[in-house]
Length: 323
Length: 250
Picture 1 (cartoon, rainbow over the protein chains, first blue to last red):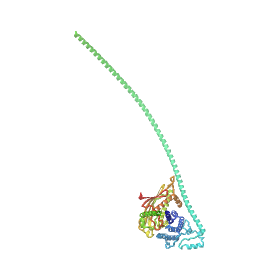
Picture 2: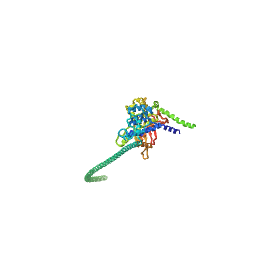
Picture 3: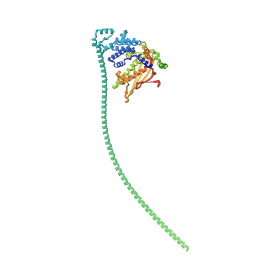
Picture 4: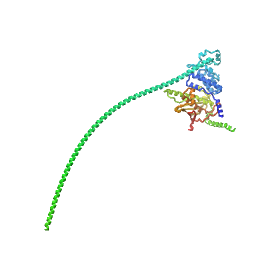
């Protein structure tokens, strides 16, 4: 409960916020339409805050600057004076702004603590030049309105403020609505154009991509064809080379075979020759051996005969001795 | 009765403790006691994409809007803390009368801002970088509060803020309701809304804990979070909650 009470107490005394949407909109898109909306928002915020005594510091000054930018210098001066009155610490800054925006009104110290929204509603504008009252509105002012205007308008003001009767107010409202609708439409158109441009860009990008893809495919096909031709040629060459090689191999094989046969014949001849030689050698050796054997046998026979003869001789000798 | 007395005493004790800590972190600001703060034009050092396609221009426009939102929302926490801050349009007019460059304003003597304009301190915001991943937006922002009396920096904070996007079961980013409302209210796309929300929350977290100024409306609930060393990371998680990682904790 205590916390809740504290929170509530804190919230109740807060300053009313500035019309930030409009400020941002004006800073993003500095047109007369946005400036007018900003002025309107400031006027409403000021009136609400004055009622609750929660005025945001600098609000009068900002409203004054907005009015000065719209061309309503006298009212702007009043608002800047109101800022100085409400926040005395702002005097130096506001005086500098006044000197910058309206040096001729430096001596004007009149102020008002409420924004006259009815008067603000009178300031119609066109989008080309500065704000000005519409001719159709000015032509239907009645005498009481003129009196009110003469009371309200400062003498040095360059504008002609006009108070409208209910019909004119409605007319003004309609004009404002039309203007707002026109601005909205322009904004929507610009968004739609941006979207269309985006779509077009995407389409273009897509077609470019497809074109590039087709060209790539075409180039690939051509390269494939060339490759195939090259491969074919290479194959032909390869086959030719293979045939030649085969022929050579055949020739070489035939040559080899012939050489082999020749070698075999030569070998056979050699072998036969060697065999014949061997045979003749063997025969010769056999003959020699036979001759040797015969000689040995003859020698043996001779020795045996000699021994037998000797033996006979010995025996005879022995016999002769015995006798 | 004693039970209830403790209930009243406890928050007061806690608040007292927090105040002491805050005092030590902001002693420079306490010494200076500024009443009026002027927010100098934003120094945008972030890079934009070269404009080749429509997507690039949309991306750059989104960054531009978020950058403007960074400047616009910087005044809120200061005003709610009780400082006098000039509005964005009036500040722009004041900046138009300035002949010095941003760099000169940061480094040179700015005592004339006090003597001529009655400004006590100037807040310089520098946007260093925007970056993103498929599931998060990131911004690197530097805040410098310089006194016009002494020329000293009474506050200097560098923040690396990131916003984690909530994703659905397919892995596609799913925006929070508050972001959708923002996009609807401001008439912008969701990415821009998310970036704007990121800078808005960053401003809130960096500037909300300054000591209360003269125009404080008595809402003296200390929303103090220990978030102001020289450097910290601020992460907005997929559920919209904020996590702070301070450099001296790392």
